[in-house]
Length: 258
Image (cartoon, rainbow, N blue to C red; front, side, top):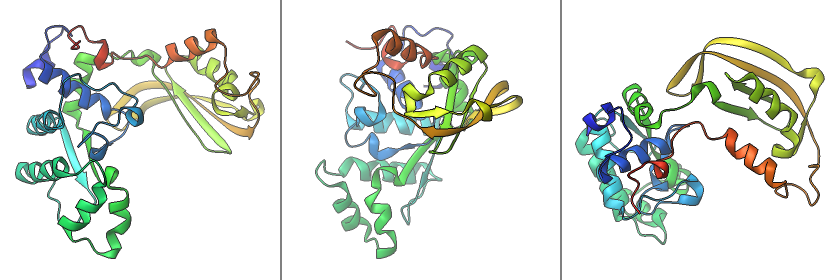
């Protein structure tokens, strides 16, 4: 398993290796809730395509392989869960595999005998157990993903303030200018502050040597597109999509199964 991620080529990957890469990709932005994958992959919530022919048991086995390889680690809000040993992780995966598609929370309550204090945890069962990339997992993911960190972009905002960061200053300024078409808010240009930062953590497992960072204030505004947001022109939609492509998605791999 580990040797496949040391390869320099994306081709000639087995279905098991592709599944492992898919799982790593699902957790690159933030720790991934296990309930989004098992017993059924929620492709819409993940914004990912399922691995063709891959069953819930296959995803579970791949997660265990990644854990054994030191590429991911688990956390859990469920009392009694053991996330420090292989047997504990295996027991958690087995529990999720037994969950019915109808109402997973019912099974959790019945098997774990949870008290009232953990009722909210059960309600949010899909996020109660998570896995995330380790440093080793991040480096392994990069060998296959070939990420273009020079064009990486991300933003954080609420209803009043926001921030953007990227190594691509042109992209950052373009996204500032088109912010209202993407987020139904207007950037107050008089409040924009631009900095160059060193050693900036862009993802929970990845730090870049330098990035541009813009901070600003926001005000609500209606989209300028006729018929409102999501009615944007085709050229704009294609441009925006191109700005989000900075690594190889699993389904773009040469050996992605038909």
